[in-house]
Length: 139
Image (cartoon, rainbow, N blue to C red; front, top):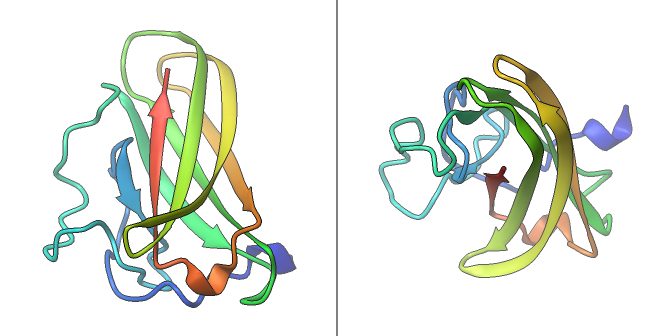
């Protein structure tokens, strides 16, 4: 599927995103994009902002470097004991420290142990400008 072509312009960074937490700056491990602002790229050790909701997988995509959108597909998991009536997943795209745009997805009745495959797309964002993205969840 063409839209799953990875954003090749995102460079250097984190390999292996399993265990990354919500509110975490993320990227695609195949294109090895820059992860976060610190140079250590220590993506798996931060505390989750929302407790037990964790990002366990994510991957950036676009049609091409010249398309007018970029997206992230991934999986979140409720590792806690609480059922959330609604969870919003937001992916924010950056060039340096400039926010270029964001995309969202939502899941309702997010039960303990449940996984959800999200797809958040930001329209009007040129993939060639994106150098990192951040995934956050809000129950």
